[in-house]
Image (cartoon, rainbow, N blue to C red; front, side):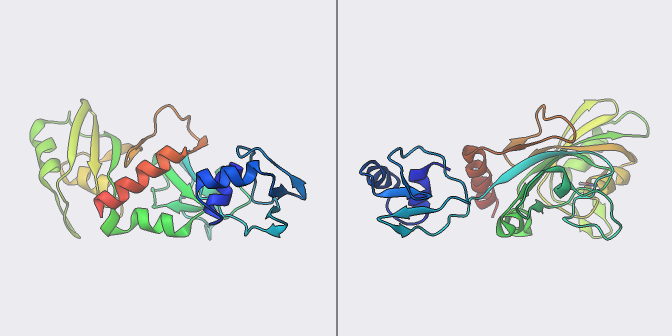
Length: 235
Ligand code: URA
C-alpha cells in the first residue's frame, strides 16, 4: 500500500493531507525519513510520525481463484483433501467466499477478512452468481429453459426466478442469486438434465475470464469496490 494511503487508513489525516505530511519529512519507515508519499509500505514495516509509531494497518485482500475439480472449498478438510486456501500461497489466514461442490470448477473468491466473506454469502446480501452447466439427456428445449427461469420446485422449496441462456444443445448458462446446496445440479435434474460438468463463470460484477484453471489473481481496488457495491445493492 502507498504510504499516504497507509497513513490515511491509520487515521492520521486525509489522503491529501497525509501526502503533505510525508513531503515535510515527518514520517519514517524503519527509522529512515521517507518523503515520497507513493512509497510502498508492507504490513511488517515500522512507520512513525514525528517519532511516534503509527498503528499497523490491516490491508484487505481479495483473490479470485479458478478452482480445479477435486479441491474442496472449505478452509480445512477433515479428510485431508486439498483445499482452495492451499492453492493461494499466503501467510495470512484466508476465508473462502461461499462454497462450490468438490467437482465444480471455476470462480471462487478468497479474502483475509472473515467479515467480508460472511457478508458476501449471507442470504440478505446474495450477489448474483453465473454458472455454465454441461448437461445430459436430450437436447435442451425452450420449455425447460422457461421452467428454470420461472422457478423450479425443489425439496427445500421453489427456486427464485433465474436468468437462463442456452449456449448449445447441451450447455446452458444460469444466473441465480440464491445459494442453496447443489442448487444448479438440482434445478437441472428437476427438468430432466443431469449436470455432467459445472463451472462458475461469474460472481457479482466479476467474471472468471481467461484465468487458467488452478491459477489465482489478486482483485484490484476497483474490483473490490464494485463487489462491495453489488453486495450492498443486493442487500
Ligand atoms: N450449484 C451446484 O449444484 N453446485 C455448485 O457447486 C454450485 C452451485
